Amino acid sequence: MAVDSRCIPADNEAMKFDTLQLETMPALSSPTVVVGLRGWGNALEVASAMATFIVDSLDGKAVGRIDSDACYRYDENRPDVRIEDGRLKSIHASGGSFFAVKSDSDQGDLLILVADEPSLNWQRFCKDLADLALNMGARGVISLGSMFDSVLHTDLIISAFTTGDDYAEIFNRHRVLPINYQGPSAIHTLILDACAKRGLPGASLWCHCPAYLQGIVHHGMLIQLARVLSDMVSVSLGTQKLESLWNALEIQIQELIADNPKLEGIVDQIRKKKRRGAIQNREDTENKQADVIRLKDFFDP
Image 1 (cartoon, helix red, strand yellow):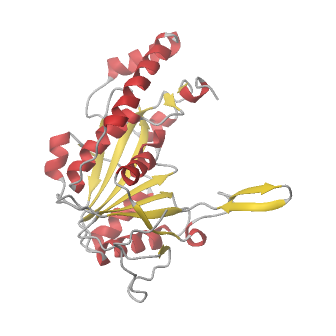
Image 2 (image 1 turned 120 degrees about the horizontal axis):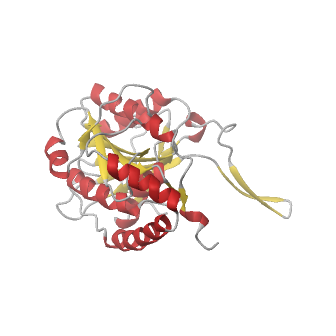
Image 3 (image 1 turned 90 degrees about the vertical axis):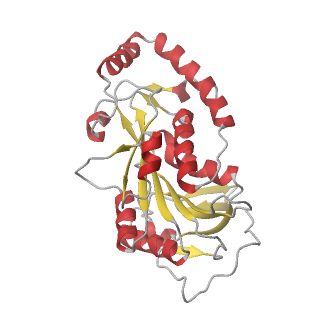
């Protein structure tokens, strides 16, 4: 992917980082930094798919990447290789890229990170990310996450935690729920902690996905997340394509549930016990995923 000609060369002295490598310093005006990570906090691929959707929709230009050697364990996430007729053709290690979105109108600029969740040097990575945002004069940092929960596929619930009240009005408008949690941390928390220490506004959005649904991208959740993000970053995100995909998928899900009495019973129990605003503990729902719909098993290869 070509680098945007509207970007200017980085100041090598001011923009050196231990875990990030920027080919260019984007010439962005008070951008919002959006982080979508693949891995643990990416149920039904909502977090990474949303970040990728923004890049594709707004013609994001690659401007940098994560230093894979600094952030990933190759013995746990081994590089993918392609060897043909005894010759090495390619090798691809875990990592991620930064994309710049420069607005030509009154909409906001964006710097988007789409990456695998780092497995090493969390504190250093989060410090570098917050310092990058600070050096760019960023309006804020938003991390995206998604979790399995005891909800229906038609429940489009988003919860969040923040460094302050910067997004309070927007959250009230979109009925984003405040998170109450105590336990093991995700890297998203460390990102916000690094932002708070630098006086940067930060928010972590979490989409609640049905624990009985597996093997797809939850386009319905993407639509709701796009609406919230559009308001937060002052960028218009068209969702027509997502809506078309979700309408077709929702019909398929309903048909599969209707044909499976056991799953229909699980969905009925969730519907009866559902209490809007009462978010279940992630660990509780992860232990109840024996009965799931794996839609990819129904798709033609």
